[in-house]
Amino acid sequence: MRCITSTIAVCALAGAVSMFAQEQSPAPPGAQPPAQPPAAQEASKSTLTGCVVQAKTTDGGTAFVLSKAEGGSATMYVLGGSSQSDFSTNVNKKVEVVGAVQEPPAASRDSAQDPKVLRPPLITVESVKVVAPSCT
Image 1 (cartoon, rainbow, N blue to C red):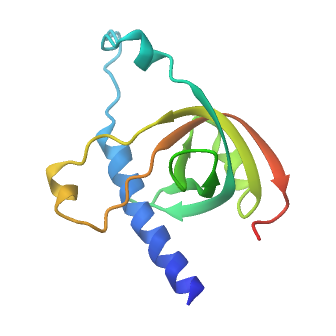
Image 2: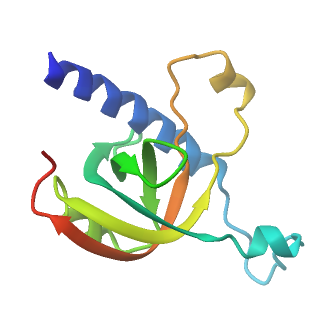
Image 3: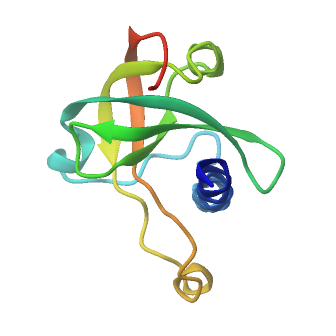
C-alpha cells in the first residue's frame, strides 16, 4: 500500500514539474531581464532537510524532488540549480540543501480545473550535504 501511495504521489509530482518547467520560457539572446523589486531579486536562503527522490516528468524528462522536507513551509520541494549528478548520486539519501526557495507560479486555467495537480515550491540548490545514508 505504501508503494502504491508513493507511486501515485510521484506521478502527480511529475506532472506538476513538467507544467512548471513549461511555464518558464528563456529570454531571447541580448534581452534585458524584467525589472523586479530588490526583495524579489534577493530571495533569502533556506536550509531544508529531506529525502532525494527521482521522478519522471510527463515529457520523458527527469526531475529530482526533496520529499519529507523539514525546515520549510512545504513537505516537498522541486530541486533545481545544481547539476543533475549531485542529485542522482543522492537518491534515497537524507540530505541537507541550502538555497533560495521560489513559490510556484499561480495556477493556470488548465491546472486550476484539476485538483490532482501538485505544485511544490522550487529550491535553487547552492549546496548539498548528505546527513544520512538512507531515508528511513
